[in-house]
Length: 449
Picture 1 (spheres, rainbow, N blue to C red):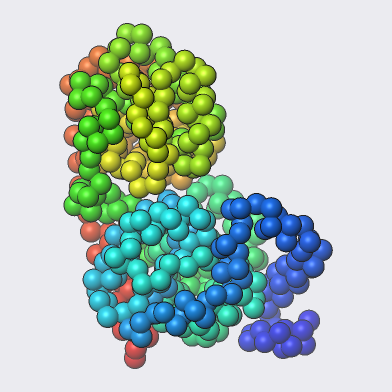
Picture 2 (picture 1 turned 30 degrees about the vertical axis):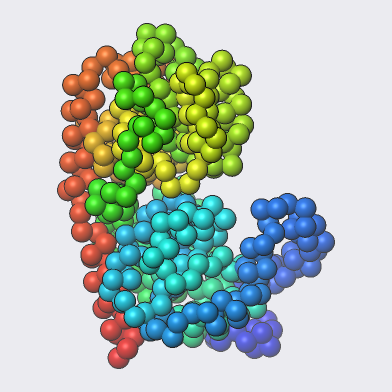
């Protein structure tokens, strides 16, 4: 086993950690050898796998690397998908301001994440990349070509080969905005032999809450490596940063007299519930207008079809608004904040189905009353904070969603009061980005020395 490590240029002593990396790569190579024909066919047949896959394997990186400026330091930031890009957008902009002559690279795993990043961070990032597959030669090829001085991982998406390769090359890696849900903590403990070496590969880990810090330390990470710096999502939704996304109703073809409910970041199974609730509400409130923003914008067509089958005059954002319509499906990226800015009530999706919920701060920052379902595990602290300050209400099922929405539609004063509380909670949490930049500058200073 040790000889095998030497042949494959694994630079570590024979330890349990070494055995973990070896086992990981052997299993990976066996899997690829067995399933390569199937994987190749999937790439050829499915459009979503084409194009980016070669980049993820490390091909084309030479051309990208040559197009980069020679500015230093080179800072590589990785965000898994749309949610993580949204979380780190203020940090990326702050890093650009702190290092105006540096090179900022942002990688994403998903196609939608990359599209969203290009839309909101075009002026702050020098190179957008698909995240390399965690195959040893792909990782080494990408790291060798872009030669980062610092790697920043946002929240999650841990991969052993990349983190180990950075460590053996002496490139500091930092986990920012870390969080550990109850389910994740159980999984990390059960497979501690696999996850702990990755966590230990980080030079520093910043977590959102004290409980997150304690969980990381309990897993075996050195307590001096773990810092509580708060949740970047609070700064990511600050009004100043979203000023360009604030819209009025006319830009969406919605008359000013309409009362607007936004159901944001919805998933399959939720739209049916929301449409049934809307049908009941509109009988009493005929001036009601509903905007559904599916989390995956590619679901815009089926969601629109579903609404039309239910008898609604439903339009898609990508098409002209239908006359007399009372429902819009927002199937575009980067516009959800715009509709939250002018709505009267906001429901945050991924919470009536088991998807962990989505960011309730997005409507809260605009002073809107926030509703969400029982599954907010991915935003537990934020959701609880909004409930505690009376800026949000929990709706456990369809009946409660109708009851709460009905109450808010009848009581404008209640809507305004909830909105004020929600906006105040966001304002109280300012400064998370600044604390992260100060920490990063310390790390970079240590690297220079």
